[in-house]
Structures are given as C-alpha cells and as structure tokens.
Length: 213
Length: 280
Image (tube, rainbow over all chains, first blue to last red):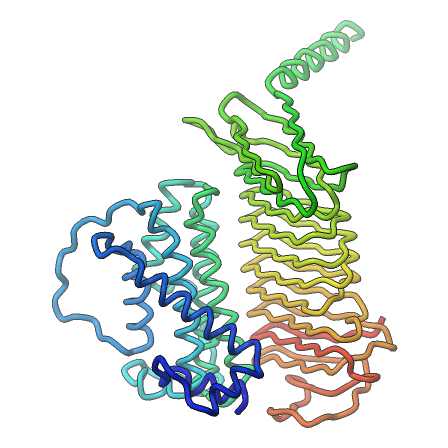
C-alpha cells in the first residue's frame, strides 16, 4: 500500500486499521506521524470541558469551509446571534487547531477526488479558466471580515495589509480549487491547494497571535 | 551667512541631543546551559541575533520612548524577552531595537511585526515570524529554519545542511547558496529566486501562486526536476534527460527531466507565474 492509497482510505478508517494499513504504518514514518497527530488532536479535543464552548471563530471557520465545499447550504432564515465574546486566552490554541483541521479536511477531500458533485450548486467555469485576477473586489467570507475586525481593533494600521493578503490567499484557494476539480488525479494540482490552505492558515495564525499586535 | 550656518549647526545638534535623550539603552545578561532556547517578541523594531562567547545570552535593547518596557524570564536553558507596549504606544513610540548575542548552538524564536529580523552564524533551530518584517538569515549551518511572513521579503544566504521551510503571502524570497535535506518555499504573489547547486540529496520545492520563480544552477547540478505553471510560461537553459512523469510535459508550460545523477528532487511549481531554470 502506498501513502496515496493510505490517505485515500484514511477518512473511512475507524479506530482500528486493517492488516494492510497496519503494515503500511509500520513501514512509513510520514503516515504513522499523521495518525499520531490526528490521535493527539482527538485526545486533546476530548479533554475540553463541556462548559468551555469553543470560540465562535472556530465554528465560523468550519461552517464557512463546509459551505464553500458545498457540504452544507445557506440557511433560509438568518437567526440573530448574540454578539461574539472576546477570544478567551484559554481557547486561543483552538485557532491553529481549527486551521490545521481545515487544511487536513481540504486536502483529504481533494485527494479523494470527489469534489465535483459537492460543488454542483456553483457555476463551474471551464477547465483551466482562472478567475482570480478578474474578481479583485470579491465579497469576503464572514470569518475573514471578523478577522479583519479583530485586526482593526488591535492594530488599525495593519488592517489593509491583512485585507490585501486575505484577498490574495482567497484568490489562490479559488484558483487551486478549480485546478484540482478539473484535474482530480493530478498530484501537483492537489499541492497547489495544500499550499493555498497553508497560506490562509498562516494569515489567521499571525492575525490572532497574542504576542503581536 | 556665517552666523546662519552656525545657528543651523547648533539647531541640528540640539535636535540630535533631544532625540538621543528619548532613547534608553538596556542591557541584560543571562547564563544558560548548552542548546539554549531564546525567544524575542518585539512588536515594532529590529531584532539582530549573532553568536557570542560562552554560554551567555547578552541582550542590548534600545527603547525609543517610555511607552514600552522590556519583560524577561529565564530558566536554565530558556530565555524569553518581550517588548511590553504600554497604553497609547504607537509603532514609533513602541519601537525597540534588539541586538542579541547567543551561544552558537542556541535555538531562537523571533516575532516582530515590522522587523527587520536578522540572524547569522548559528547552528541551532530558528523560527522567525514577521508581518511586514524583512527577514535575513546568513551563514547558518544545519538546523531547522522556519520562516513566516505576510509581506516581508525573506533572504537566506549561505545555509548548508538545513531544513528550510518558508511561507510568505506577498514577500519575495531569495535563497543564495542554500542547501539541505528539505528546502520548501510556499509563496503567494512574491517572487522566488534560488541561486545554488541544490545539494546532493535534498527535497526542494518552490511553489507560488502568481509570483515568478527563477532558479539558477551550475551545469554540474545533480537534480531530478519538475517545472509546471498552469497559466505562466516555463523555460530552461539546460538539456534534461527525459523521464517518466505523472503528467504530460508540454512545451512552454511544463517540463521534467534529470541532470547528472539526479541526487536532489526539485519541484518548481507556479500557478500563474513564470518559471525559469537558468544556467549559472
């Protein structure tokens, strides 16, 4: 079994692994490290006290990503939400965790090569057509706007920088996603997507880093 | 005329004296064990790290106003120093410039918004993070080098046997004489420039969204190279031995092949930028 094959069946694996997967894990450091990381994340998540609700950032990020992937739809009626509380310092570690999960999630989805049916609601451009440069004023997603609001409150002078970078990264994700959807078996196309998500995770991580303004 | 000149000189001297009076110099020394870990967090201003004598971390900080103070903590092998902005501090009044001497085997972690960040002649791991800060690393041997910037340019010079990972959204990345087991650059709109021999057994991946990629290598380089751009053009100055790939090489937008003994793997991938593999 190759790494690619292992990653392909990874989402379907439960707590146990088959003989073939076990053999691969014994011989492959990269995949065994991946499993160890996922187990560590899972164990950390269980340690969360139920009274400590994760930050709205986490839920928003996951929700927006799921919506972008077409896995959930926009609700018919918008319910008013209570104002988002300030990010508690004890929960800030969830932000990079959520970003990591988003990367893993995005990578796994496209490595499986099953993206087409899930984005059927979106108008699909012709293969290879890239729209990033044609949509400079694209509306930003909710969690991006929230991030910019946080940056504005902490360091107004950095807001424009973060906004420009978010737009740039979103354009990268959009281009990479289209390329991956057009070429689901192309490993390089998947790498573009992973790189784009890594950049977005980094922007979030830096914007919410407590040590920097 | 002579009197006017005299007034001007006196005025300049007075202004210079006033400016100097507003800066404060602080020095701190910490004894540490071997392979110490040093962390500097500085919102506004430069951080420069160089190797110093003995097992001592020597920190010199120039504070530009009373709106910022220095916090520090120390354990046997760890030193942590951070600028603490007080109420009303701005990028100007909160500025602190650090010059730090560390044992050459120390690991360093640097954070700054504006930078610049500079590290030289170390052997330990380093993690450098800056928003708009420029990052300059030179004469480094072994160790992990992880760099993240939003728009700050990154320059690495004379890095051998490194494990290099650089991510930047908009900053240009320049690698001069850099080799190691892993050299990965993930850039958005910034250009990537590599000038070196790609070592003999490394994994090199230079990836960008719209930034151009230029790699300059000598004729004796030993590489297995893949270059692809979805929208941009690719060119090479070298004749390559063809090899089997998972994609169809297309003239002008992709090529693949080997040179020499194909010791290192080199991937040059851009979405819409130009890629050029040049002969030195």
